Image (tube, rainbow, N blue to C red; front, side):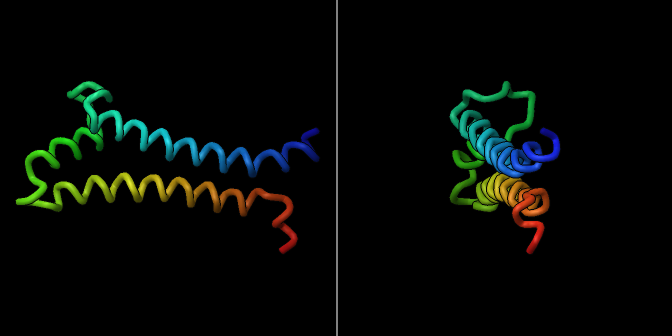
Length: 96
């Protein structure tokens, strides 16, 4: 079982975990943006984005762009990490 099944299950599992992690980050940011996320003493990119959109969208647009780019790069990074780990762990790609 460890010789045949585990190597063939590892690659899809890594893709699913990295995709779900990116989705969890987006869900938390969305809920915090709407005011339904973590309570105010804790840091959250969604709350940071919500407060900067209301106040600084016209006068200081970098206050809106930086949290958006942070969320985007973090989710993209987890997806690329999962894809590269799949390339390393997939037994069907080892012969290439």
